[in-house]
Image (cartoon, rainbow, N blue to C red; front, top):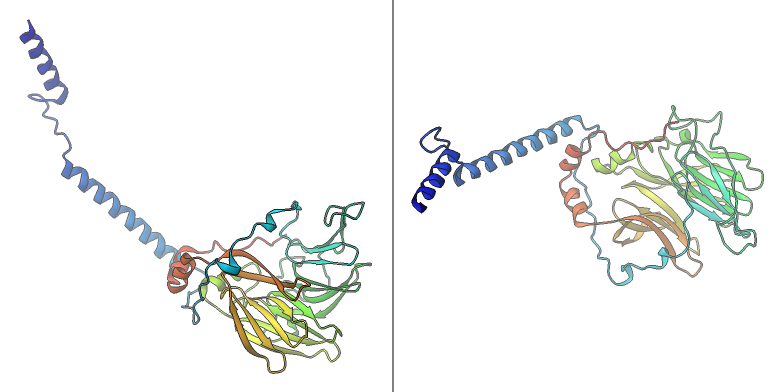
Length: 348
């Protein structure tokens, strides 16, 4: 009886695997390994083809950086702090960039839709930024040259307040002032007042006597495509000095890898300039226009502002990592990976 049961089970297993009938061959370990190798090979071919497609479709040619970024660790004075996690966040504003504050606790903010807005304090005056929002400008300046012909508004990237006068560095319109009470706009430096013309007026500072304005021109590309210069390793940022009395404009510094934030020292003998891609703050002597010191930091710097305590705030959005260092030394990867995907949306 037991023998018959075993025979039936054995026959059933033989039929299941095709023994003596279809002779189905089960996959061996070696065949499985070969299949895995073939899949990896196909994947590598696809990656290589995609990279070549991106390389030849890229709207720029990557160049090796002449000056490699100095890596600084996030330790000691650069260790992460938690103070900025406190407080409330003002939402609903399109890409707010620079901020200025008057003696009545009003905030002035530039937005990517071209407007400069005023944010009032709370009704009791106790909380900054908690009150109503008022449009100071429409963002549209007529009858002056613009960098982007197909965009009808500006983008205020740098703001400074002196009395009732708001000084503005605008990526599309250049340098102008706005009366903080009436909203009246007066152009100081048009984009075609220098050669080559301004591409992205980014930030500015003014001497106490109002005679000189120092401002940065971020890149050789326009604000909707400036990341192409970052990926390509192009360093064409500039810093200018504008004499408000003679209207003379002179180049203070050039060939910077994204000339960003600008800040005069307290004695106005030096100018601090943020070079974003190099993760550096340059100290320029305004009597010789030579860089007397370079401060390397572990973040990508933007605007620079005084704290009122003899030190300076540096705004930063990204931390420099080993991955950035690898890409900096191998710029061809940028070109293969960034074919046309870096444009900012600034159109109407």
